[in-house]
Length: 152
Length: 101
Image 1: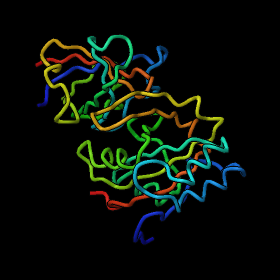
Image 2: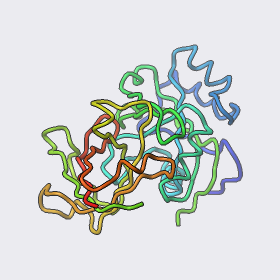
Image 3: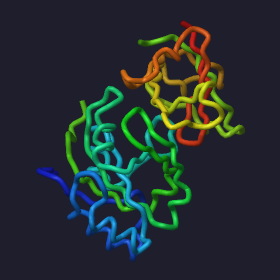
């Protein structure tokens, strides 16, 4: 599968997307930088969910591209860290000594957002939230920036 | 700067992870005594490196590890011999870490 630019893949965490969230597919045309963009704001206004971003290293990004779902890390972590801007997500994607992979937009359904815990400012980069995997099972996940999908 | 450490895993029945990590490197958020009982507005990630995957242990005895902050701008002075801190995956307390040197 070739990846030549942004907005290349729309997937989910697990299971079929809830029908009302199909509108979330619009997000693939939203602007990349900074905030959530018009589509994301519209989704929030409709109370269909909340938009976050996640920085992926190359291993996670390749796994998502291959499987179309966000999967648990093998390190025992039962959730994923999220942030509120693509820029912050990109900064995290290239940290921890791993190869930066991609930035994903994660739209969490409104009925799952209460399980997401606000962590605060993290690593001097930006605001962080922690989402248990259960809270992400019906999330709409789309790659908004590809950095590198070839794990070293 | 990397420090030697002992990782004291939280029991699963006390809310710790169900299984120890089957990997040689984990990254978690740190909580130091000086932070109080909850995260302040400035959480820092630490990297723990193991010589063998903790999952290969037959029990939850402390694991030897090397520890360092994940970022150069972190408060490195907090990592010193005798320091203790806890590591977390989100709200889940995974272990307490004893810095040895």
